Image 1 (cartoon, rainbow, N blue to C red):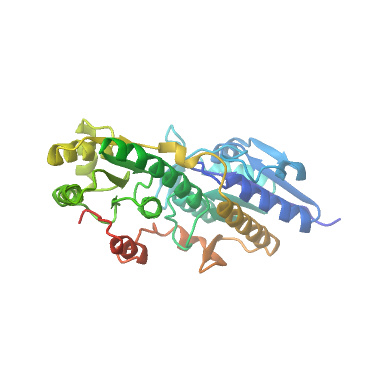
Image 2 (cartoon, rainbow, N blue to C red):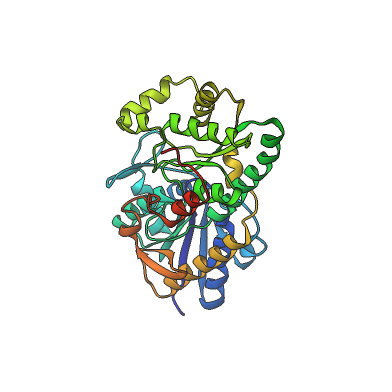
Amino acid sequence: MKRKTRVALLTSGGDCQGLNATIRAIGKTLFQYVDNLEIYGMYDGYRGLIEGDYLYMDADNFSGIINLGGTILGTSRLNFVPGKALLDDEGNDVMDQMLATYNRLNLDCIICLGGNGTQKSAKLLQDAGMNIITLPKTIDNDIFGTDETFGFQSAVDIATDVMDSIHTTATAHSRIFVVECMGRDAGWLTLSAGIAAGADAILIPEIPYDINKLAAYIDGRRRKGRRFSIIAMAEGALSREAKQLSEDERRQLKKENKFSSVSYELADKLEKLTGQETRVVIPGHYQRGGSPCPRDRVLATRFGTAAARLVMEKKYGYMVGIVKDEIVAVPLETAASKTKFLPVDHPLIQTARDVGVTFGD
């Protein structure tokens, strides 16, 4: 009898659109081409691998889920100690428990769907002796080795829609509106949504802003008869003063800050400098939710089928990515090596500047 092929699926970190579409593509491809197949869906990410809590998946589990947001398997996070360990919430090293589940199920590999943290965690699983394939999931689009991640375009669509709607009320009341987008360390989401929605200012982590220059820009718009302004602001955007501080100093400053987020602090300062009523909108986790857009469904399907083929080829230790519209297999150590920040000379930044957008610099 032909040996069984045993694969585990695991979704880790924050959820986003396209996880289920990717899971579907993996399962459908494997069931089509692999005989004597067993697929285990680990519940709640690494928790399922730690505790041996899983769903034995048949072909029916992969039907009717391409349009579903979230993840049918659930997700969670582990505390990552760079290059050393994965810890649970109590600070216990859980690698031995995960390895025990891997060996008990006699798995050929684990396919991990996740963001930057998942790539790093998956590399530790690989170093511990497990066969690993990963897929790049994040609305931040900040995973190194791939031009795009699934979930990104859906989040851009949502953030754009929010700013589109804000335009009407901003115009009616002659207000400044600050729309805070997700993207703690990278400005991909804020930049794309800001351009698509016609934002007047875009503030991203990679380009520290000068509050006085931003206020002067808004005053200039008002003198030209443009009575409202829309500012797309990444949650990780920094002023020039904050950029000069160390990470520890910024953390301490955040603890002492009376404002709940960077956008509220910016709005308060702008209102004082410009004298113009300023409001804040934070779409928050709304950007992660709902059905994946068609582009993400297509990308997720391409990624999922590629991951399945890596399984069939027994090609482990890779992340599936896309570069110049070609699917690629990126060595896991490369994908886990660093964050893909938005280059300050990226063509999209120049495109925004060419239509009059300010970055506050």
